[in-house]
Image (tube, rainbow, N blue to C red; front, side, top):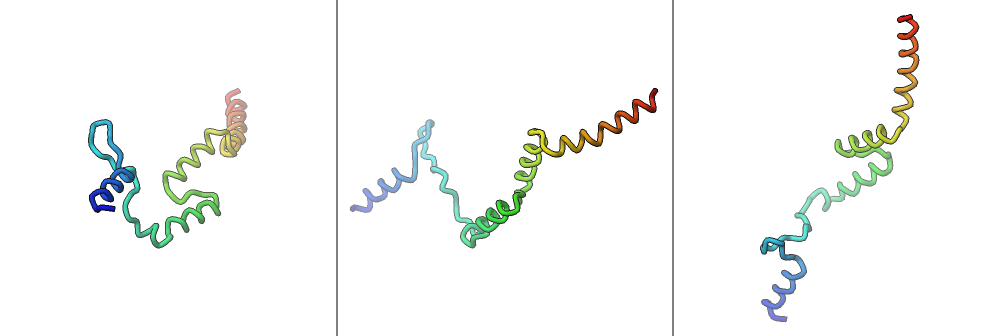
Length: 93
């Protein structure tokens, strides 16, 4: 295969035309030494194993889902708040 035809084939595989007429990469990303060393995979396995995300945004997302889906936190807050409200009502009377 001629070098020019090979270049055209590679370009057709790796690139797509954008709506504005320019070429846009398909998002293969760049080189990551952490992925090459296996650090990313090890962190993912650890995170799945312990059940707690290792990133700040992951922990925030998990806590938000926990609170909004009526998790244990809602029950604990209810158990603490109920006696306090009752005591306040009794003191008020």
